[in-house]
Amino acid sequence: QVKLLQSGAELVKPGASVKLSCKTSGFTFSTSYMSWLKQVPGPSIEWIGWIYAGDGGTNYNQKFKGKATLTVDKSSSTAYMDLSSLTSEDAAVYFCARGGRLFAYWGQGTLVTVSS
Amino acid sequence: DIQMTQSPASLSASLEEIVTITCQASQDIGNWLAWYQQKPGKSPQLLIYGATSLADGVPSRFSGSRSGTQYSLKISRLQVEDIGIYYCQQASSAPWTFGGGTKLELK
Image 1: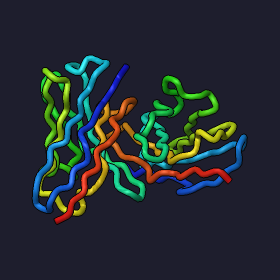
Image 2: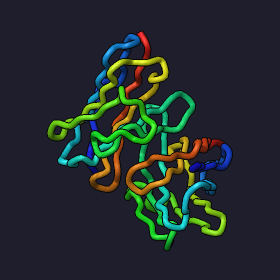
Image 3: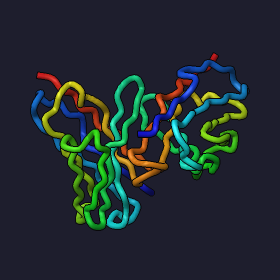
Image 4: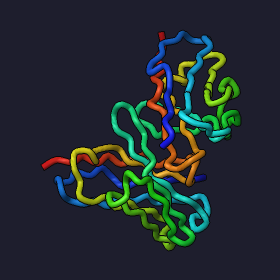
């Protein structure tokens, strides 16, 4: 069955960067779109962007350009998201999801805490 | 960006009651509307896509409808396992955007 396993919780200092991972199985990763989403208490969900694993093509929400960088490793069926120059505004739970527009499968989420 | 206005923000209902949640799009999104359910501490789960189509494995007591730019999610007979937060999402024009969520509790 489809599985998306995300990396563990991160505690990072303001100004630092962090790389989150999403290891997948149960479907053909190389022909799939993978999205990343941000959830903050409120509650509120924001779509960050998608990456097409086939050729690495990306589409970002303008709000997250310069903040998030999406990459994939087809050899390990893993998607990654780099978050740079972290501030308190970046503290959230981040989800990976299969799909570029609709999200039928989600990872379990990674909590990112930003604190000195 | 397309704004999705969801109501109510919270809702308390009894078991077996009919529950309706609505989402208003700020512009025409056609049938590019999805509904998700999120239980406490879990990831969101896709319930409805294409405004009215039930996702795999979703109980038939869930249904979706559309009237112009207003979309509705209906739970015909509320069950204990339906408690959680419900979100709408437009998938018509990037960036895809979500409603603010409806917290559904048992009365």
